[in-house]
Length: 127
Image (cartoon, rainbow, N blue to C red):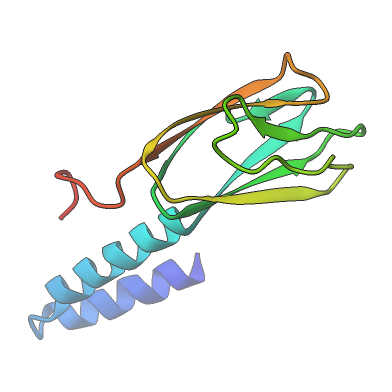
């Protein structure tokens, strides 16, 4: 909250100098980079949350086991590296570099499934 208040004050001060537009664009670009840098999936109550996660190419996705029993992550078609068994609090991360749809499941409990949708790092909608 404090960071947003400071940023708003700086932008407000720059409005009179004509520099605010550049600051706003730079801040939006920085936020977009942060959003594509990492994303997470929680494993809890025998589910993946979110069940479908959409990220940009280059994003590191981290699964964290919040259940009190082990789980494991595996791609249905072996397109990404399988995790070790994750005990409570353990995490597994994988960097998705290629656009596409990646379906995965818990190899300990195969009824648990999820999907990672990887979009191109840049697109027509970005400015």
